[in-house]
Length: 269
Image 1 (cartoon, one colour):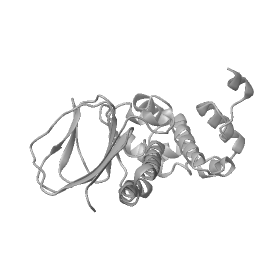
Image 2 (tube, rainbow, N blue to C red; image 1 turned 90 degrees about the vertical axis):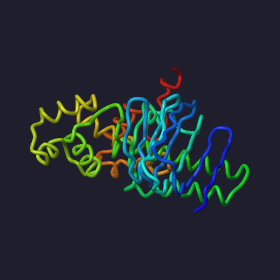
Image 3 (cartoon, rainbow, N blue to C red; image 1 turned 180 degrees about the vertical axis):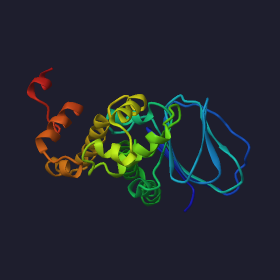
Image 4 (tube, helix red, strand yellow; image 1 turned 90 degrees about the horizontal axis):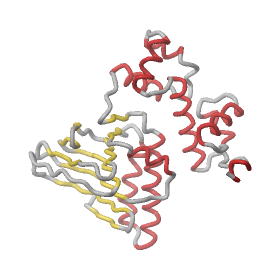
C-alpha cells in the first residue's frame, strides 16, 4: 500500500509508512482542526501537554482543536498510521463529544472501524474530483459515528484515571450489553455489593450503573436507526423487551422519537 495524501476544503487525509523513522525526537504542535490518528504499527508514544501514553496497534487517538500534542518515536521500527484532520463534517453535534478532551480508543476488535480506514485508502486511489470528496467525506463521517457508538468500550481518557475494577466492569458491560438483565448480575459476577457498585460508578462515570447501561444501549440504537434499521427491530437488538419502554427512554434522552419525529408542541417551541 502506497503513501497517500488527500486535501479538501473541510478535511485532509493521509496514510504514511515511515520505514526507519528518526527517534528520540518530538515536535509538539497545536492546530485549529480536529484530528484522528489511527496507529497501525511502530514504537511510539502519544504526547500531550501534561500526559503521554504508549501507542498500541489499533489505537485511535482523538485530538481536540488547539490541544498541544505530538507523537514521540521511541525506536527506528517501521511507523505506519492514518491521519484525518477536519474542520467540519456532516455529523450530529453529539459526535463531537468524542473530542471533549484528548482520548485513545483501541478498535483492534472492531472490524467495521478498522476496515473503514482502509476503505478510505481504496477510495483515495479509485476516485477523483467531486466523487472522491463525496465518498471519502461519507466514509470519514461513518467512522466518527462508529467511534461514537463504541466510545466507552475501550476508551482511555488521558486526563481521567479509571480504576482497574471499573475498567473490568465497563468491559463486562460492553460484552454483555444486549443480554444484561440487571445490575445484580454485575454484583454477582464481581462479588461486590450494590452499594460498592453504585459508589464506584458515581465516582468515575458521574451516573448510576443502570443509567450508564441505558445510555449505552440507546446510543447504539440511535446509530443503527441512523443507518436505516427499523426502530421496531432495533429495540430488541439493544436489550429492550418492551417497545414502549424503549420509546420513552429514547425520547427522554434524545428529545425525539426513534423515528426522528418531535411532538408538535416541541416543534412550535
